[in-house]
Length: 270
Ligand SMILES: [Zn+2]
Image (tube, rainbow, N blue to C red; front, side):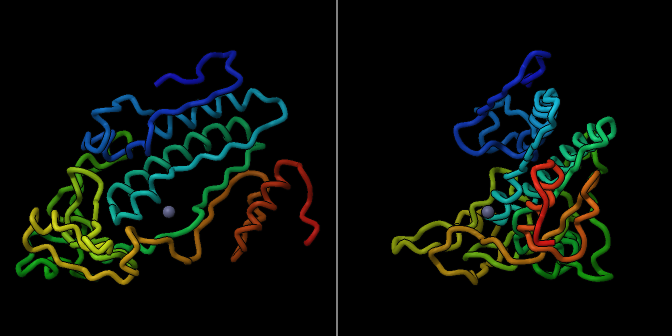
């Protein structure tokens, strides 16, 4: 993908998909979802590089927001592997910004989410462990280490359906089948509407995997997806002004720091 590489480009507008773009797990490895139909979707790193190239031509500086929006969009349908791959993609985009900041030390970089989801790693699933399904989840000292292949030069493990996988569980969900396996064919579609309009566990997954566990939802049955949660979010920052991010802050304070860093005004409440 070559966008914004011309030395004279001053404005850029890119639309690459009529719906959500595909995540890095599908684009680089599985080739599922809509990758066959749209094989030339740019990566977030391509877009970040192009945007910085164009915006940095402004002698008065610039503001750039880069969002890895699919992290959220994969967490909603409880597809944590796809979300995790796009976290890797985001961290590569941040590296591009950091490389720019090395030669432009007046750059403030802020990395933060706008909300959380309820997922956490609880241990490691061992296919070889004896017992039925959930007995294969090793926790604490029994967890051991997963056996994903070492990250490739791009920073991604090339395989996720390994015999020792991270056991990742969400705290809020609609009815679904827990398969303890990555969804290699397409993004997880945990629930479908029944004839009464309620969302129920997608029977496709029990057909695919007989020992999948039915998880009765803890959200109202009109919810098609997992929901955002109210945990404290992590914020990382570097560069001039980053020292103003300390301890617990209200999210609206982030805006104030940005305004000051851009020289648009001062936070009078302080
Ligand atoms: Zn969301």
